[in-house]
Image 1 (cartoon, rainbow, N blue to C red):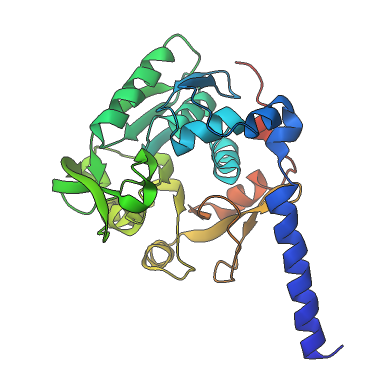
Image 2 (cartoon, rainbow, N blue to C red):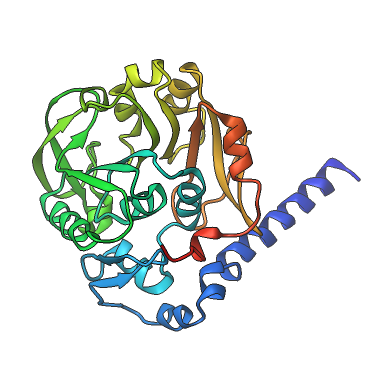
Amino acid sequence: MTSAASRRLDTADNRVVDWWHRYLYKPYYLRSPRRFLRRLAREPMSSQTCLPWHLPIAFQPGSIIGTELVRKGIYDLVLTEGLFRLTDPGDVCVDVGANVGYTTSLLATRAGTDGHVVSFEPAPDVFALLTRNVASWRGARVASIDARQAALSNAEREVVLITPAAHGGDSSGRTLEHTDATLDAIRVPCSTLDRAGFDRIDLLKIDVEGHEDAVLEGCRKLLEDRAIRDLVFEEHATPPTRATDRLATAGYTVFRIAQGLRGPRLEAEIERPFAIYWNAPSYLASIDPARALERFAPRGWHCLRPSRP
C-alpha cells in the first residue's frame, strides 16, 4: 500500500471514529433512555437534579453544567469516570474550580466518611450554590467537605475574575486569564495550594479555564515533595505545554484520559493529535503510574452505575 493510500485510509478511519463518538456512542443514554428524551428539549430550565451517586445538586437554570446534568445525568463523562476510578475511601481530595460542586459531590461520595474534600470556588454567586449543595448532602455517607471562597494561583493576592463574552455569561467559563472581550470582571481573593495547609493530597482536580499552570506553580513544594498522588487537569493546547513539562520535571508520569469504545483509557503518547468531542481533554499526572494503569484497565463506565451507599 502506498503512503498516500495509507493516509487516506487513516483519514477515513478517523472520520468513522469521530462520527461514532459524536452521534452514536452515548453510554449515559443507554443507561437511562429517558434522558434521551430530555436531550430533545431545547432549553431545559430545571434548577436541580439527582446525580447517579444519589446526591441532589442545584445549579443556575440554563447554565452549561446544569443543562448537561438534566439531559445526561453527568457532566464530562471522561473526567467523571477518571475521578470515580482514582478515588479511594479515606482519600484527601482537593477540587480547584469547584463551580456548584459536581466533582466535589463525586469525590466526597467515593472518599466516604473517612475521607476529606476541600473545594475552592472564587465566584460569589456560584459559591453560594456550592455551599447550598454541600449543606444538602449532610446526613449522606460522604466525606467531610470544606468549601473555601477563593481562587488559586501562584501567589497570595487579590486577582480579577473575568467572564468572557464568548461564554455568554455562563459561570463555567470564568477565568483569571486575560481575554479580549469581557462581560464583567470582579476582584476576588487568591492564594496558593502550598499555603493551604496540606501535608498530602491523594487526588487533586484542577479546572480553571487556562490558568492551570499558575495553580501548579503555586503548589511547587507539594509537587517537589511528591505529596500529591494523582492530579487530574484540563489542557486546551496539545502537549508539551508548560503544565505538562512542569509535572514531568517534578517526576510525575502524564497521561491523556481518552474515551474508548468500551470505557476510558490512559494514553502515554500525549503529544499525539486528538479529537475533542465535547469537553476539553483531561490529563492525569500520577506519582504512581502502575496504580493508575491498573485502575483504568477494567472496561465500562462505572460512574453511571454506582452502588447505593
